[in-house]
Length: 257
Image (cartoon, rainbow, N blue to C red; front, side, top):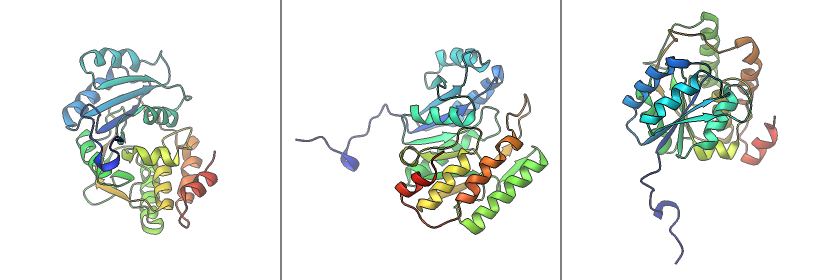
């Protein structure tokens, strides 16, 4: 008799329900309170993958020490190339759960929302966004120009491209792991993965949902967001969100880097 598959297959009780991906760059001890809040907040069975680009990164010895007492934490050394996009790609490829949530190492995101985002993926959405620009959401601090551009892009994509979220540029999102592996990630530089996958979901007509979030600018350390360098990457995916439905094969042929 063949093994059961699909809905009839038994669930693995040891498999996490959500994989949290955290790209980190020289956060040092600053990552500890972020991890403390995360593990206090997430109630679903989880794994937390902190991804760094180099063994010399100041984050690595801190997370290795933390992982001794917290087995859900997995320090990872990215081998796909430098930069947050490659770190996120690497983390997703190592993820064991059906839902992945990308969040930042600087504490700007609210970890209490990770469960809610993952539950939306569990219910069938391809992308679940934490939105600063819907009712109940807010952005506190951060550069004025960056915030204005992000808000304009997010709302115009929601109104005119109907991407399903008013905050497509926010990195704090959950994704169906199967969806990401189906469509692939073309980004290789910054944090444009968030808008890339939202745009791909729109062109494939896959469901996208959002919940409000309050984003707080980091209080320690320096931001690693490079607006001038990464803006053309965002614009590529902003334009891509507008267009007729595509099949997966058509999407992959049009988005090859």
